[in-house]
Length: 395
Image (tube, rainbow, N blue to C red; front, side, top):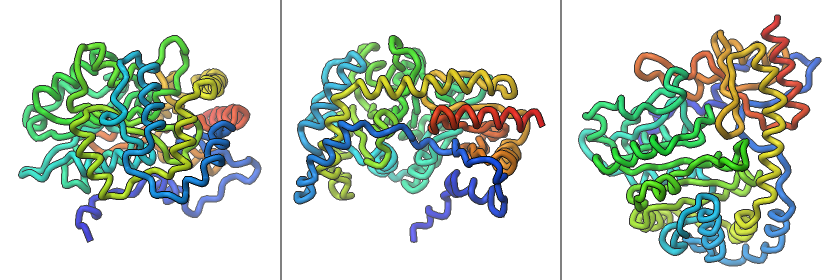
């Protein structure tokens, strides 16, 4: 077996199951699970219809590059969403089976074996795939804590020169998980300048880009930032997904876009890895990327939940509206595991301890004392959960 597998830590939800082992939640309350970022809004009918209408595609092998109409739909969506020139759908876009598998596979194809080991820089807390991808590619993760005192942003200027010289890959997540922080144009500019100086690749995880609260001010994206700064897409690849945008996490559909030279090699890797997308899913994905009405409605539903829940929780927790995404990153004023356990045991509400999403780095675990609350359940359930959290804090 690959010895690097021993470096992997249990996934946050396994740690949550271990935390709750042997605990019986209060049966007087109906279970409400706000721990996992799994969208619960209804899948749009147009997507389900497109999936059903194209089941005959199951009789053919799909190509790794995917069908032209899907790549053209993605190119058109990117141009409209970010106000950028249309990407070349033949060389600058690859459909993927969700951003999760693509983020992992990308590290395997980008990172090269060096001595000392290459470095992968990641935010902390972070999406756990970043760390696993780095470790299984033989790299060393370097974590940048995102804390209240730095406005939950990565302080790239704090990274030592010796680390930058070994860095081959930088994971950026905007809007961020779990804080919902959106990077500014100035922050993108610094990341690009550092990439120019040291030659590392930027993997921009943008799976939450379409969950925001002001229709007139969508979050800036990495390709958009590069375009605004007069740059090309050298050493830049973005990762996007339909899971959150279109409420289809089970379809496992997304795309990568950016540097054509990198994507040419990534496509070769994926061809050998066997990562082609189901033909029916490609047809349904094409329909999804072409429609914005369901996405606007999706945002409205999330905005309604935030407007209902946030004021209630602000009475008892240190929590603020995020820039985007569907999480509340709440400071509890007590150990996060204790808070989560008591909430589950006494009120049958599940949230995720922040420390499970982070690692000890630079003398601290930046998730300690925080919990991630995913507002993915119905409005009524989210409101009820907020009331129960208020009861917990009052007791």
